[in-house]
Image (tube, rainbow, N blue to C red; front, side):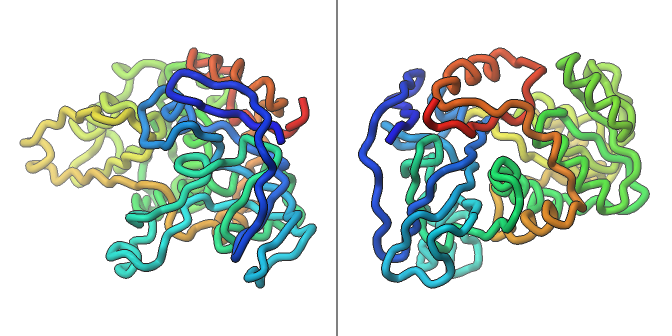
Length: 333
């Protein structure tokens, strides 16, 4: 089968690999759509924990083509999305209900072969029925599930004013979930002009192209979709009101430090809330998409062939504002 392989940081190639086989409680999935995530860029650049050589891709959907002998929920032909974090259910963190901190986590696209290939094997408990959702929307189950948990943790309230840092796919999903909770004023900081113009047309609120233009102490909550340590620090130090909340969600490079005004944090009771991945939120994400409450039809901007991934990773690294979610839908090309 054809697959994209990160042999080591900064090296990738399309390779021919043996087709995997489903065993025990595993499903063999013919991948139909696989999204490129910002985390994939961090993995490519060696800025995230991963095991090389690696077939990346943790946002994917596809068709079940083989089931292991111990599978009970799915059959050949079923249409599924994958929740990549597969916990052991037996370590201290799992036993406390903190499955996303599992010490033995299996993660396709991070420490196991992922969805940037014609076929992938996952545990049955990592697969979720997407019904008639388009494949590329099914592949958005993973990022949306992560955003669902992050907004649950931030807990924005009706009548509050919220700022979202970054108007890429994650920032757009955040804004739509925040609006669904009754927040009507959602501003953006987006320094890429193309993305800024696009989100301004959506009329969520004001769009700032420069950090200096964002007003002081104006926001009840600030949600970071950029992964910029500087922006998270600025949100805590200047942008939030007293008792304001800052959501650290965008993925930073390992080792980055925040520069927080400790006295301001103490004096104004600022809360910094981190949200790492999802915690069994895939069913919520699929229901939100299937019901139409959260519209994701415009999130995917490019549908590409597997052979084009290196080019599009370069474009993402360069900050190409024409890109939203780039999704592989052709694995033969």
